[in-house]
Length: 316
Image 1 (cartoon, rainbow, N blue to C red):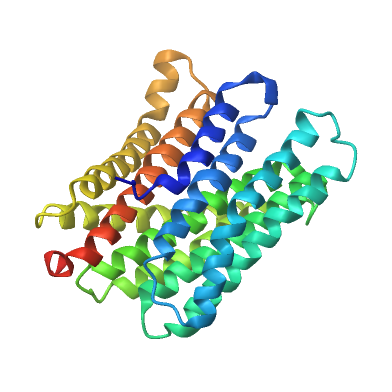
Image 2: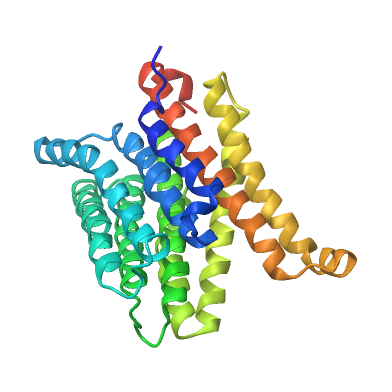
């Protein structure tokens, strides 16, 4: 029997090779960016497959599905040309990165159509906004590959901004949006969505111009994820839900709380084991990307599939 996440297997294999072979000479940020292009975005596309679409959206969705893997290969070739093939001083890495930028532009347009077609459905607006944020991530990726300075920010900052928008900024609104598809609507839900849409912008602007703005954005984002995971854990306990969905969504929530505990414990761990923040960054990155984001997306794919087959099971 074909698995729901079969379309992500080729990208997953490529990601494992990229993470484990020294041949590519990629840094950790570049590996996470390629993980997003080959695995995270395809899972998001699977979630969009559960969306109600008009004829134009259906055509665009088919085109997005067809172009995702070639666009990811162009992103891989872009990074390889700068790091593996020694062409970092040429325009080739930047030109190849335009393939991924144009693909994220398609996601952005699809997201905007969702927002326009679902003006009264807050959850769908959140999902559409998440797709728009992928385009911003693609923009930062292209700047990084062209090695251009932008608003006095250096290419390393562009890479971090791209990772931020491919994971946190895009994924959290999508998570909160799909939660809105199954939850009993609460008065606080639109406020969570609104804060979730503003938070990534504050973080991005803060990274470049103002630390206080960055802290405000991070605080909003962390509070939103806490509300999302707390409600989701309570929801998962209510009824006979899809076992795989429950398992992966539970792991996603636990990964987030583990990050919180590690962040709070950092001063103690730093002194006890002579660790620095550089020692914790890979741990945070792995927990967030593979724990919170990957497990969460897989769980929601199974949840949405089960919802289509047994809609009354999920009524609360």
